[in-house]
Length: 291
Image (cartoon, rainbow, N blue to C red; front, side, top):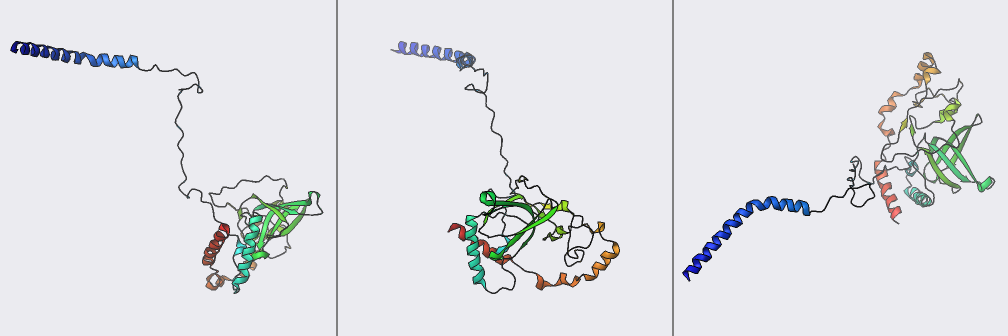
């Protein structure tokens, strides 16, 4: 029995030594076996072949300056009641009608200096509609009485049309070019050269960039010889878009400065703070959209 145990132990030791020797050689053979037994690399002849190399998708860089989906907020000026009015019920009823009208007609954002195309219902025109394209030279009025005036030069004749913003005959208001000017009123284009108020009626619309501020056109116009409809050189108009150096002498400019009122700059009662009014109007507009 003891002899069997010794023989068994000797056989066991021999197997262990042979296993250690083979363990040194097996890693190289195993790697060769893995290399040969692995799947063969397919050669692609085109991008449509299955298994072809596909480049990774391009990274997307998000603009962090504005929140995603956030657009420029614009409150139309006719929503702000005139200063000194003490009857809020009247303006509240008008705003309700204005918001209901805006659900039927899309009234876009536009300013004095923007180029618009307005389509109105006309029972005497061909197709029962008529269009007019021009530059907005004035916005006036408040509430349902808000108006805007367009001007264009057609066949060397200046044509102006004043539209009621909430007129039910208006079918569409299209902003052809959204921009601002240096002045809040461009009525002086009546006395300027015709080229500054001449626009092609078939002008194609320019797509605005909603994530940027509205561009300001710093164009300064040249005026016709005097007389003008108003004395635009006087400081009370505060005109910035006219080249006075080309149409007036230094003596005439000095004479116009006599009408200046520098003390009005320090009159704090002339300022109309509408920040609280705008905040309340935005809440009213959001409530109307949800209803």
